Image 1: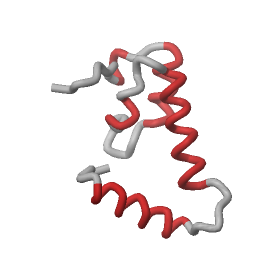
Image 2: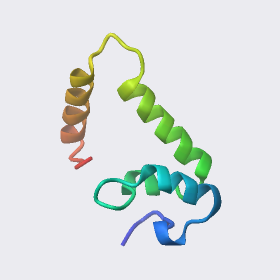
Image 3: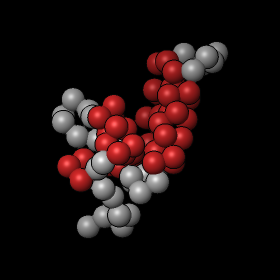
Length: 81
């Protein structure tokens, strides 16, 4: 059982449905790390834009280095993301 209420893809409408359409992964759904924002679409947009900036924005840190940092941080936090 989730601790945070989330709106599933099938139940989404309006702006949330539009965001979900952009965020569908190859496995056919939206990652829960993003769905936790489903009750607050502006926070979903902010989370997504932060991720894109950190992982793909201009930086002296290379893309492989960013991925390594993300893996180490996730492992340290016992997080599968």
